[in-house]
Length: 189
Image (cartoon, rainbow, N blue to C red; front, side):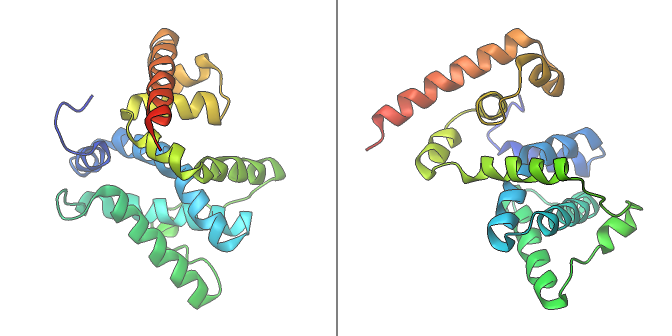
């Protein structure tokens, strides 16, 4: 998709820094489950997890224009923000919402269904390390399609709509991704 050897996340943040808001939306959707998993494992609290993830992405949105590819990988940059927010929330005894306020975002009002979704998304981060390593060998397109179909159990139409492509393209990505995963896992010790 990106046409170069740089990490796709780095390219997404670089595009966002250049004014492409949609690039940040893709980055957000790609890494929300990981952030939820990161916080839920450390706090054990679904509401706190949702608040922390919201603040991390708000802070990343504000700081994204200053992101400089090459200084640090985009994912390391995001986890750095997350770690800082987690430490800060422990120190303060609450989640700071300064970034969300700067963006004029309302406080989160979570229903039971929202909290269940936090757990579901966080569960995608709890994938076995061997499978995670195999997933890392896939292209971002295949990885996103496989996770959406297999882990999140979304239907092809919904995935295609979210990825802005045809159902046939999603089916092909899932098929190729699963085939590659199977091969990778069979070869792994």
